[in-house]
Length: 297
Image 1 (tube, one colour):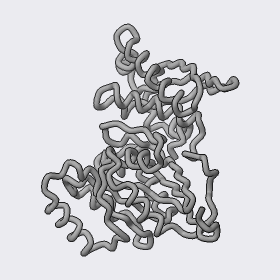
Image 2 (spheres, helix red, strand yellow):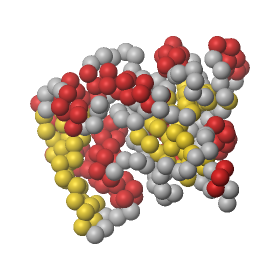
Image 3 (spheres, one colour):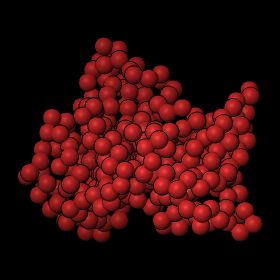
Image 4 (cartoon, helix red, strand yellow):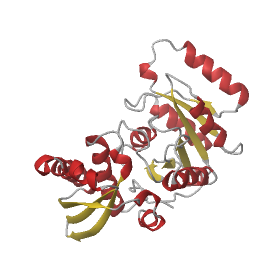
């Protein structure tokens, strides 16, 4: 057991453009699925803290939305604002980019990181690289214009070099008491996690555009012993989107509910009764009241 006076604790922001694997990396580092994932970009909407506690340190990872450079709108403005705020509050930043291609959007995210915060550069998806000379050249070029505490290539989906990444992070954390209990995995309540799990299934099971026009609100969350009873509304923007979510004969909505319930039972370690409804709320993504109710501030 580490000497208590040497125990380290701090917050680590995981940043990058949409769809570079931030949530996948966070889940891999924490060792449990606490952040939703999909192959679609910008699945994450709110900063979520995933917590890993070892004998020597407590790592509080902050999964941020992918910084949006292409689209405006009230929700995307708020998401970008949350990224900027997070970067002023953490002890370390993990800057992710797709190791197969360093883009202008990746550099734009790097430019957002304050100079005073230590940065670990994390090229992800290195398992997809056949020739690493381009990656080496990119790291050399970046290191000439920005100082990195270290560079740790990873393959988040496979866990490649994640233990090395944790070791580099630990060196940069301040000596401090833990912020959370040792068995905590996230700072979010079960009600929030239930909504996120449902939203993940919408991202995974519907088309390219619909997930971005949908939101999930928990109408009722009750617990009776080990049983959770959850009633949730899926908000869509247009009348035409409602039958898409429901599917022929209600089959898609049933599948969303079944897969979400199974994930909830694993996360909550107990049985779940889940009932889903679909509601049309025109312009919800531009409605400040709805965004507030969704905690998108």
